[in-house]
Image 1 (tube, rainbow, N blue to C red):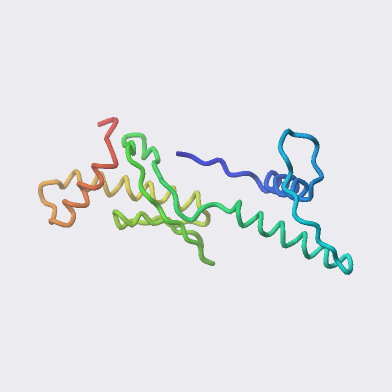
Image 2 (cartoon, rainbow, N blue to C red):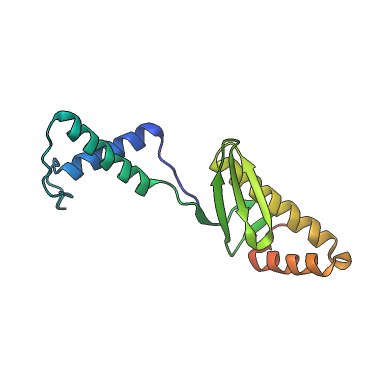
Length: 156
């Protein structure tokens, strides 16, 4: 599954449109605009603060999710047939993507880089465990079994 994230200008356009819809200033689209109960303000700064609060709420609802199902095409030879559940978390250093089921993670400056790094890590782990199949410890053999539930080799 691949997600197409909007560009910054597209995102601003979406938020502007949502704010207009929220205020009830829309052309007829067949849908009833979201219209809150009237709020009366003492001055214009109160109205501005209310609009900022509404837009912030909409941004929060539009934020990318912190957990997703991840099924990349890995290096052209491996195909994920059952997606991995991946948890994303950000910090000041970057973003990490963690597949807890197989105890692997990827790291990058943004979500895309972290997921690419995780895909590479998963592919390398799968291929190295398959190559050493007969000499694996019990833990690594069970890890390979989990990986084989998720991944199939499409080209030798």
